[in-house]
Length: 124
Image 1 (spheres, rainbow, N blue to C red):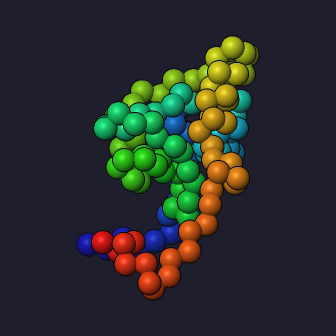
Image 2: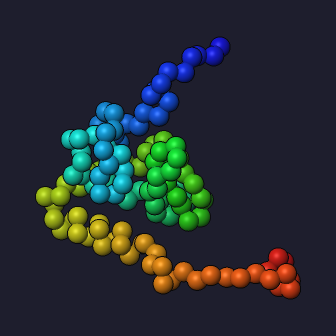
């Protein structure tokens, strides 16, 4: 049985803290409601034990694991508990932001690799 699609109902994201419809994004680029605009989320861990990095794409929020790859939002929220960090909790927020900045890759760390057809070892 097919249901008729209605305009605006295909992509409704909920706030991870309270479940209301998300209207804005917080400092971590996670869609949240207006009440939780100034709150930060703890770091999530994957089932394998690695930390998950939050990303936003065409279809909404998803997480990226270095070992497993892409982990969808629902699975990440099921395996982790959501904790809030308010901006008033200065030491925790500073520590969290430092960890986030350490994780980010600087453009100077990246390097371009050019593969030629003569490089046989690359495809082994």
